[in-house]
Image 1: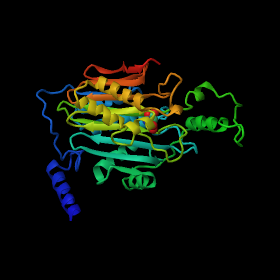
Image 2: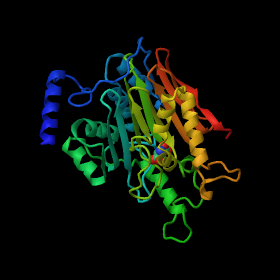
Image 3: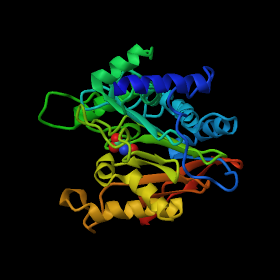
Image 4: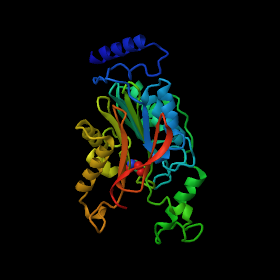
Length: 352
Ligand code: ASP
């Protein structure tokens, strides 16, 4: 009975919104509670790999009137489609078995809805599938075979995502990880520098934005930890961990060690610090401090007692302020506003 009523409501909503509206049926139905006194200067932030086109495309689409969640997904699609970015989508580094498994989440501020997929295979744009989960299901998260079946039902094409270069990187990793198994390295034990740089690497793209009305949206998409256990899911597809958007406050997302972010609900923490009045940069820094304070397992600590991994946060608030921070300094993030796309420095909690 409740289900019948919900469907009836959605039908009415989409009729009112008009069939040409890209965000119908269920992303624009709700209204954000906060009221702004003056228009916001739109801004988009992303992890550093969003510099090459992503933030500029998202910003242009926001200014042209597209819903923020659609614009940021459009932006990260550029990176998912890029075979040379080994952290997401096509060309992403695979799990330990050589299978590329992708995770993504989206959140739409005005409706308060989220969509996500985890461990999806052979679909290069998991962010778009996550958007379809948000828009065309009554759920938030689909995983594995179910996520793939849903994507297939919606016509997302399947393809091999392991590019020749990503395969070579994986093969080097696989063949040099043990002296006692039966895998032999093609080029001896010396791993080429261009391959070695990817060992133990994590990578992701997060992109969040705010439009002139103060409406917010965000996306996080990733191939996850390189050479992970099959089925390992990180923070990226988990609302509250790798991404969180509250249309009354702000939007935040992260890259880095997903396990640390999962156990601290990191992006939610950033938004809560913004709700308490912190500038986005300081809110990101406070969430980094929370990770440092809660990391106690000896295997995760350096000799000086600090985490032996990095996590970075990126955030925008409803007023159009933005910032980013990381556990360790030296990183950058991508920004685009009316001044154009650029990189800015992340504030570090600790010196590297
Ligand atoms: N956070 C991602 C994950 O843990 C990886 C990364 O951002 O580097 O899956």
